[in-house]
Length: 138
Ligand SMILES: [Zn+2]
Image 1 (cartoon, helix red, strand yellow):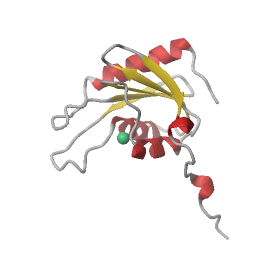
Image 2 (cartoon, helix red, strand yellow; image 1 turned 90 degrees about the horizontal axis):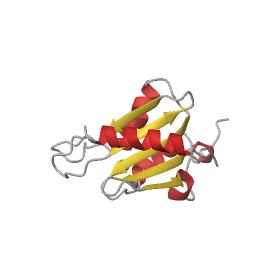
Image 3 (cartoon, rainbow, N blue to C red; image 1 turned 180 degrees about the vertical axis):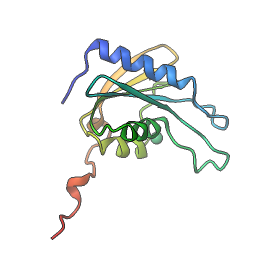
Image 4 (tube, rainbow, N blue to C red; image 1 turned 90 degrees about the vertical axis):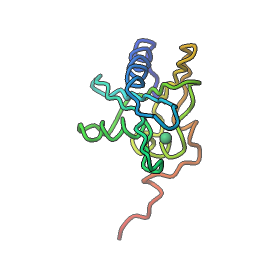
């Protein structure tokens, strides 16, 4: 499993905290920021965006991942997620992030006390389903 240096963990954590401040969460009031470190050092971030329909709301992790893919990235070195409580990503986001690296380091940042907890996506999504589980054509 890949590891992140303390400097990279801090860089990602700060980016996640920063983008969290732009979250649009008028309904849940639960603001989340996610930042993804690319192989070339660039960081792409996203915040959660809620909707009055509730069901159309999208998590920060998927916003960041979609932005990264849109910018041309399909592999990354780490993900940081900032929230009150430093909660792990929801199940949908675990699956979404796993598409681009099941062993990606994940930094969970607690906005209350600044604590950082580092784990790997594979720990958050055991027995995962992925591209390798699909039948091969022909
Ligand atoms: Zn989610």
